[in-house]
Amino acid sequence: MSAQSVITSDLQSERALFGFDTPRFREDFDEESFDFRHVFSVDHPLFTRERMRHLLTNPATKNNVYYNAGDIRVDQRWDSVPARTKPVEEVFDSVENSGAWIALLRVNEDPEYNLLLEDCLRELKQLSGRPIDDDKKTQEADIYITSPRRVTMYHIDPICNFLMQISGEKQIHIFDRKDRDVLPEEELERYWSLNDYSVTYRQELEDRAKVFTLRPGTGVHIPLNNPHWVKNGDEISVSLSINYQYKDDRRKNIYLANYYLRQAGLKPKPPGTSKIIDHMKASAVTVGRKIDSQFKKLKTTKQSATQI
Image (cartoon, rainbow, N blue to C red; front, side, top):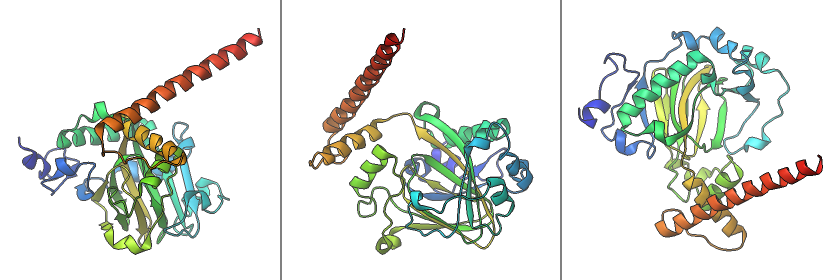
C-alpha cells in the first residue's frame, strides 16, 4: 500500500483513530505543523468530567497534575504566573469561572489511558513509517482542561506532539522552529541547557505563525520545539496530547556545547552547519557527562567509606 493511500484513508476505515488529508504526511512528520481528524469526543468514557476528575485522586496519577490560574499574557514567563492558592480539585470543579489551565500529565499511568496511548502510537507508527518504538525515550498521554477565554503563554516543548480537541474550541498559533528571527540559536541553547521553556514572544512576528482553529474531532501536529501559544474560546476546552520524547540526545548535547561555548565568549556554529563539528560537540558532552557521573560515584563511595 502506498504512503498516499494510507495517509489519506478516511476515518470510516475499520478501527481508524486518525484521518489525514495531507499527501506529505511522512515528509512533514515532526517537521511541519498540519491539522488532522480523530475519533475521540466527550462521549468517550475516558473523557467524561467524572472520569477525568478521578485522575486528581487516583494514586497513579494524582502527583502528575499541574495548574495555573489568573490573567495570563501571551508573552508571560512560566516562572511568573500567579501563585496557586486553591486545591486543584476546587479549581477543577469551578473551571468554568476559575481562569485556569489544568494539565493532567502522564495520564497513561492509569491503565485505561495507557491502552488509548498505545493504540494511538501504534497507528501513528504505521502511518508515518517511523520506527517510533526505537526513537522514543518516553511516551505520554496528557489532558489539558482550560477555562473559557484563557490564554496559554508562548513556549516550546521537548516533544513530538499530536494535540486533539475533545470539547470546546480554541486557536493555536504555531511558529516554525527553523525561523531564527522567531527562535534564535541563543534561546534554543538556553532551553536545552537550562530547561527554559519561556522563549521570547515577538509580537511583530505574529504574522509568521500558522493559526489552527481546533474544534471537537480535529487536531494539530506540533513538531519538536515549534513555538506556540493558545487562545481558548468561550467554552471549557478539553484537549488530549499524544506525545513522545526522542531517545537520541545528540540535538540536546550540541546545543549544550554551544551554550557553554557562548558563555565563554565564543560564537559557536549552529547545529547542521558541519556534521564533523556537530559530532565532536555531541561526543565531548557525552564524555563529559560520563566523567562527571563517575566522579560523583567515586565521591559518594569515599564519603561512605569515611563513615564506616
